[in-house]
Every structure is written in C-alpha cells, then in structure tokens.
Amino acid sequence: MAPPPSACPSKISGLDNLRDPRLSKGLAATIEERQLLGIHGLLPARVKTQAEQVSHCLRNIRRLENPLDQYIYMMDLLERNERLFYKLLSENTEELMPVVYTPTVGEACQKYGYIYRKPQGLFITIKDKGHVIDVLRNWPRNDVKAICVTDGERILGLGDLGAQGMGIPVGKLALYTALADIPPYQTLPIVLDVGTNRDELRESEDYIGLRQKRATGPEYDEFIDEFMQAVVTLYGQDTLIQFEDFGKNNAFRLLEKYREKYCTFNDDIQGTASVALAGILAALKASGRHLTDHTFLFQGAGQAAVGIALLIAMAMEKREGIPREEALKHIWLRDSKGLVVKN
Image 1 (cartoon, rainbow, N blue to C red):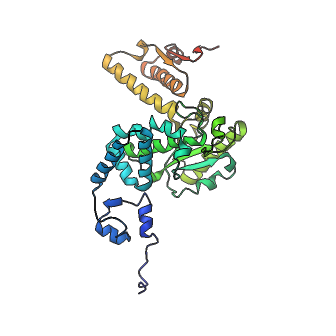
Image 2: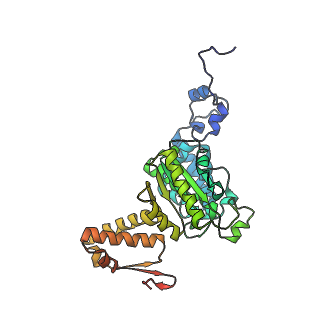
Image 3: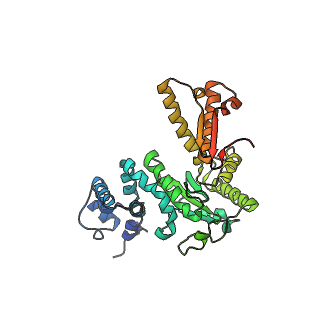
C-alpha cells in the first residue's frame, strides 16, 4: 500500500545509516532505533552500551603489537563509527594519542599510499589553481570552523612527504575533537599538493600525490593566496586556518604574510613555543627565579626552536621589562653547522 500523502519516506536508507560514520552507532543502536531507521535485521540481535563498545575496541587494539596496525585500526574505526572513535580516544587519551598522532603518525605518513583506504580530508593540487573554491565546495559540510592544512614539505622530522602528509592534519584535528570538544563536522583536514622533491616518492607505485617537483615562487604564492581567500569566502573570516609542517622558509614567510589578515597560526612555530614557554614559566615559579637568570641554548634552528626562542625573548621583554636586544643575548641556537651567528 502506498504511504499517505502526508508521509515522506526517509531519503536515507537503512544501509546508508550503517555506512555513514557520522550516523552509525553500530551495535549501540537500540531495538527502537533499528526499527525507526530501517536497520532492524541488518545488525545482530545483541545491543551493546557504548562503554561495552569501547572496551571491545581497547581489547582489539591491545592485541595488535605493531603501532602502525593500531593506527590502521583507529582510522578504520573513524571511518565506521565516528562517535565511538572519539569516545574511545577521549577516554583513553594517554594510551591512544601516540597511536593517532606522534610518533606513529610519522610512519603512517611514510606509508600513507600503501595504507590509504578512504578520503578523510581534501587534496587540493597546484593543478587546481584558478578554481580552488570549486574544490572546497566538494566538501560535504559548509559550516567548517577549523582547518588544519599542510603542503607536506616538512612532515615531523621526516622531511618532504608531499601529499602523504595528510596523516598530520587528520590526526591533529582528531585531537581537537577528543581534547577540546570541537565538533568533528566543523573541522577540515587539507593537503595542498604542490608536488614533492623526493625522487623515491615520485617514482613509487604507491605514491598518491602529484608526480612532479615542488612548485615554487610566484606560482606557489598565488596558489596559497587563492586558497586563503577561498576559505574565507566559503566559511567566513573567523575560520581558523592552522598551518602545519610547511618548510621552514615558507612557514615563517606565510605566517608574517597572513597573521594580520586571517584567523591563522602556525603550530610548529607558535603552538610548540607556547607549550614550551608555559613549562619554563612553571619551573621558574617553582624555583623562584627569573627568565633573565638563565641562558637558553637550542640544539637545532628549525621552526620549533626559532619559535620558542622568539617567544622567550618576548616574555623577557614583556614580563621582566628588558629591551628585546638584551633579551636576545640570553638565547643561542646551534644547528648542524655549529653555533648560529649573524654572519
């Protein structure tokens, strides 16, 4: 019998409910929910609580000895049951954060082409230059509030991994949700694929990105400009754009270029620095000493070290009232070639 005119059958089928990670509750769906959603009979009879599901997942993860296998399991769970993934991660952060982010995510990025299953973010390539906004429109949500973006040039300490750097924004935004309660549907991981300078990646049969050397110069800058403008056009001026794992030269340059125009920050330069300085200030409070009582030597002169050094100098200037030039005399950096000096 046809439904009465006032009844509007759901456009989402029972199988669609099970296959959509944002809708699926797995075995936690009650009998009533299964009947209403048209999935009664598509699941076994057992109804589990979410706590039972979490316990089941933990047992599965702990049975896996290889951290990369644990990472794959967690990403598979994210693709099947989003609310269970975040419940599991938020309640077991100390155990699982090293799985979904550092250090395991480094190996995951190196082997991303091999373990890639389903898209978890947007890949925007330099070939899309001129219609970046059209690619952004392909993302199924229009209420994005936080974007984590990388061009894959300096993934952790592993160097240029190109498009395989997607594991970084995916992992970072998962922690935003698990630890800061930012709704996952308001986050968007993005890779800006401008190529890679690694011959072994371009020649690998498993590499998922553009097989070309990195775009540089005006072409690169115009592409980034277009991306930033497209984000604001679609999602608004207050959308957070977090730069992650860009090469050192581009990272500092882009931060200075955009910091006054967009809601943006660079996690490698500013995020790491804020956490490091917080630790230093806590230690000083416990010891009763001042920043200016110390000299700081950094092993390395990359984004993180320079970012921390600059923030320490700013803290000396603002908290202890010494000129910036005097503050910088308390800070030294050493890289692979030795002590960093003016000339």
